[in-house]
Length: 218
Ligand code: AIR
Image (cartoon, rainbow, N blue to C red; front, side, top):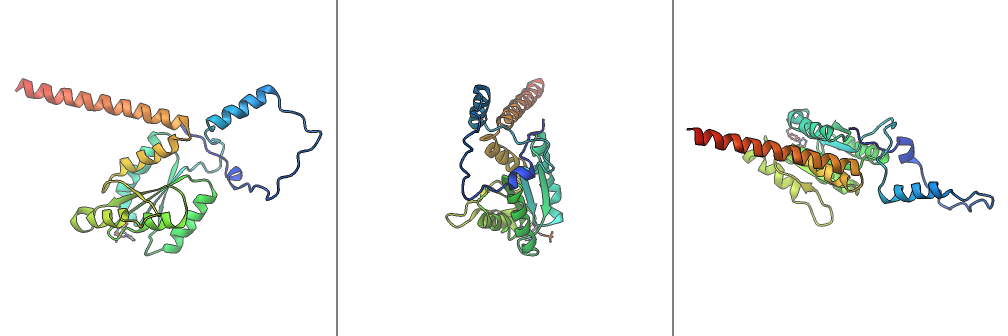
């Protein structure tokens, strides 16, 4: 199930600085149209699937070597019907590319950004400092003490610039957190999360039953 998203055109439409006075002859909206508008305001329609780009979550990572872990973020989002894209850009090696991507993503209506990096993992922090979008930090192992360096570099942000940091190599939770943020706005994502939770519970209970059955059979 693909979650719909606004067209790039719609996302880039600027509001006029001065609101034009409504034409006197403008017809009143019908009761049906008014009800439709009210319903849309209550629960925002998922953005349009016809969008040229339908990316809701941008995943940045510091190195191509991170991709085996980072691709699991995208896979989990895809399972939930959320379109995402992965961009390799480093806060230290290619900071200009990081900023250019964040600006483009923001312009095109990407709603959550995930910054993944190992070692001196400043990527998520740089993203959070540049735009006021929700930012999730995914620290990666590979540096010293199994990623503790990346964990601290990601989580220890100065007050006012939050990065919601998940566990070292916690790809699945990075995706699930992004989905929970989006679920506040899109009922279809909320439903997908509920289904995923039920499936996970069944899997967990079945594996517990099987493990206990094996123990009693010994
Ligand atoms: N990194 C890249 N630029 C800044 C940082 N912190 C991270 C990458 C990777 C690690 O450094 O995210 O996890 C090592 O990078 P590489 O390319 O040498 O494997």
